[in-house]
Length: 240
Image 1 (cartoon, rainbow, N blue to C red):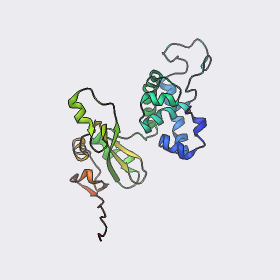
Image 2: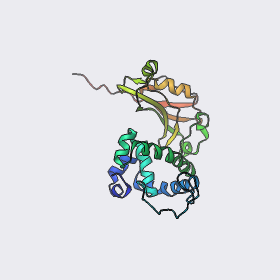
Image 3: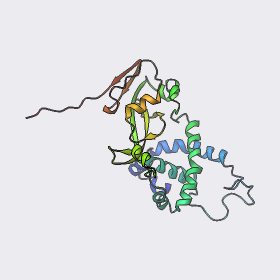
């Protein structure tokens, strides 16, 4: 069973599973606990009813501690597994896994927001977002894809089929602060077949003046006004 006690002393696996170091996890945990208690007050049951007995009495849940709950939702966000597979790791049914995902995602979002670590979702506000200004404005842009269930509709199947991944995917444009490694902006979800440059153009991101922006070949031709872009060139090497 996947739980915090088993993983906390395995830093390499912990980072691979959650995307956070142990120190970063410990920084996030109090804010997560506070956000959870605000959204789901301790004096209320899971169904929102007034408790008839003290919290913690009765059968123990599969995610008993705040650390287990945070680990559960971070692993789901980082690895993007099928709900059935994620449930098997935590000895939960698919229905229970779905329940906890929808219960914990808003809590994680509120915790990140409280710590000023939540990526901007409004492209027009990137230029004024605090995460952008941690260091001189030096950003990197990329398109991230994740697998999704194949749509039933034939037209949507074509839209979401990524020739690069050889699978049906969703895509998001992300901006990374190159000084901190933090995600500054998370764009809207678009079909995986959408070209990176097209997705960036449609997002209409507003950058601070004189921003430096690293990009790969998927963004060739993407030249926002007032931004100094840099695209690495392939080293073909000397041919015999």
